[in-house]
Length: 580
Image (cartoon, rainbow, N blue to C red; front, top):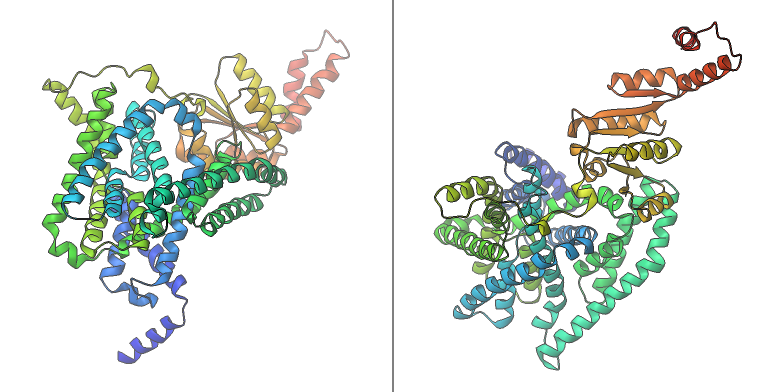
């Protein structure tokens, strides 16, 4: 037995620590996540639990590293970079303009009140000024990833509570970027005082973002145009990853942090026609490295501290949920949001979140917090994030109960200002047209004349730009990508039409469509009889190009003879039964 362990140890020593850690993380993440899905809990919490298990039950031995190894920090940094890049891509100025009142007033009030209370407590406990600022902001931030995923799972993406939650989350996202800018000034010594160093950092950040915008306008956008015209999925994905890494590196080289650089890279393309395609390409990578990031955070949690301090952990978690929940609910009611929507938004924003952990980690790189404080925040974040899905499921029933008791005003229609304005997000019972060639163009025009809402998926960037200028809802996206179908609202659509005769692509997309909307009507094109058979086996209503061409030609040929004694349509039907 001892000899076997020695052989295993020698084998482990010969494996790259990076590969060993990735293997352990991915395998354990799948097993733990399967259990959490059964109990309808967030997968992000599952990733945290994976890290806790790996770090506390001796599993790190298989990787040949320990908790403080640089490999873990490097993986976490990559996860943060991709998280910030995706945040930049998803950051919508149109959303911000629509939700400015909630974002500016609601977000400012929520963050300001929370920071004032937490900062005051931290001052009483004797924390330095910089630590007070970081701790108060970390507690004020919420888990956008968990909240938005929970809204999707509940089918409440267009609920006024979801819109309010998104508005406050947008404010928090902007705040995180500003804090990343000033962190070095808060912790590093230098001439001119803290105020002067903060001003210098802000100027550097603004100049960097302006430079990134100019680079995007005159360099990156033309590059994406050229790559898109190649129709190469691999080259487009490679370009996106390279773009993210390159600008992130530039931000780090200017001492503005990799995270800010990645956010700037995403922001550059957020308003372009390629944003949805980039999201569909980058989301699988984001999910992978987000999992690695949360696992790396879980590795830092010491279960012995949790066991020894469990009353404080429960008390701290409860205080965070009650404090933030009370503040959010009060602010949203002050902004005239209906009670049920306000309660749902409150449940989604009551926790601390992933950027709380990022902020604590970055601040710790300048001056580490004492282990007790760091462990407390890590564990309370994990606990409160885990509670969010359950709190959101119970929010509306609880609000109804309060209405019945007369404590909360009865439900009323949401104000018009809270209705979603982005066409693609509010569209429903629509037709998704994949491809905008002659067939797609004709179908789109015909459906629009009949009053049917349409959404086009197209991979020709020039066509997409023209359609956007004409006001046609369109995505630069590949219909065979599941993320693209989700962005197009496939679950709310009435029909999807694959107007190109590329049967392999249609066959790849149909199972994805059926999975998301089993009752949807699917139309496809085929050139040859064997392709017709393939599509019909997938329950696709097929337009057979050869058959339709033959029908048209037979009908035209017979009509040219002007024979009144012949039923042309009968001849056409009989002929086609024999010929095709």
